[in-house]
Figure 1: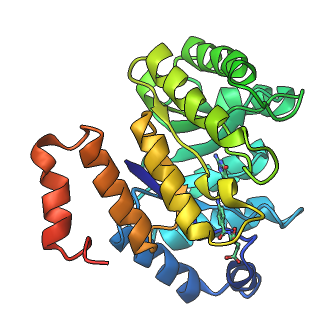
Figure 2: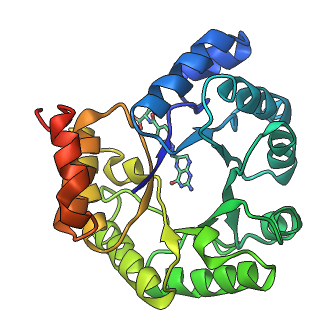
Length: 265
Ligand code: THG
């Protein structure tokens, strides 16, 4: 599982305050904690700052990269903010995300075309959020083929079928899971990703629901996720589900995690 640490997101109060105060130490600590807990990418999101998003996103990238070599997932719908953040980024970043929304697609594609960057392809179009598996697959086909035509390698694409709250419609969990299954069987070698915690929005005991949903999604082929890597139970769940799904040769990661004390919860 490719883990994208979600904690540096300005929609969280502590992060908003740290960005406003330009508190380098606070950001460094959260970046380091997530990297040490197993994050492969550090998501950075300053989306609540309307005019200052490019400046703040660039500052976040700089600050994160003073404490870890893990690349950033640059989380913004705005190509200008993404470009600003990329100008400060060392190594191969992940773009979070391109979508089929016309303006976003047209402005972001030239930035990504022909590069080795990783890119999350979010299942969203100008028609809004998809609901069924078919809605999602129409968007995925167009988006993935567009990226391939622009010389983005299949293995650098992470399709995000968009998790929506099961409290809103009880079919949303299954629609997402079925979309994962369809995406990995249609495009051999592609990756998938999602902001998983949306599933439990509006319900209690969210951590439990997020962990259980993760297990179900791994069974269908999910191999990337934007999560809180400091949630030890979530990390233990991922390691266990991957072993059970046949993704862990000789259960070696499972055994290693056990020896490291990560499974004694
Ligand atoms: N897909 C993609 N990118 C995404 C999302 C997605 N980026 C943003 C989001 N969704 C995933 N990131 C987060 C980051 C933080 C939190 C949730 C999702 C979070 N939420 C707390 C909660 O939900 O209770 C509240 C905030 C707080 O702690 O104060 O922490 O779907 N491609």
